[in-house]
Length: 270
Image 1 (cartoon, rainbow, N blue to C red):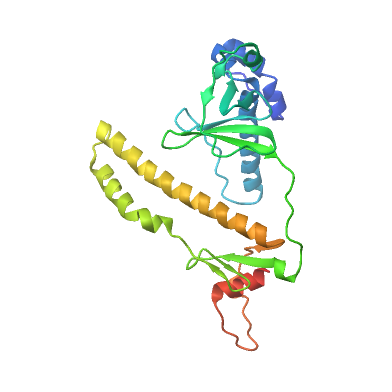
Image 2: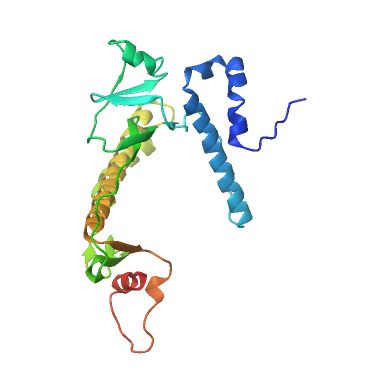
């Protein structure tokens, strides 16, 4: 008969790790807190599942992530450091963090540091993109920068729309760059080539990588644009109100005022 264990928390699961390491020595090759973070992910996934069940939503039971789908791992507190533009990860490139200080020949992982890391690093997640690239994502503690004072001219409502990327309550519109439109012809071309490639062939694998690179390029452009716009808004306004539901429907039925739908929504949001 298989043994069934009922565990009440992720902490009880963590207590089983020493026994699991004895049964599966390969687990010893992974930093301890990285293993514990896996339990944290499972715990969060199950809590979200039961919350959806309780709320009467479509539950979507958590799926097991096999070797092809598990695309990130996390150092929650320690086991890593950045020094002189190089990344050191415990159990990856070096046996221990302590060995880094003891040896001038410590192995390391070369990285492209896109900008200086500001603040105290608290957490690191290493993520693999669909194109096979690896990214190190740092969470840091940093002091809040001064914001504009809260005054009438420093409050704004923002409605995200389709015709434009966003409309502000002062009537200003932020144009939609439509990244997908710029790339769609190239994407259609390579997807057509992918559909013709026989399954299991090197040609198909190559075509899949090309499609993934274009999708990655679109996602990167959208991500950068969103950060640029949000940074501009934060620097200009002391209070930013966003996107409750049904705001475009809150029109004036008394005076018959007619105005731009998204502008009206941004005013209602504010």
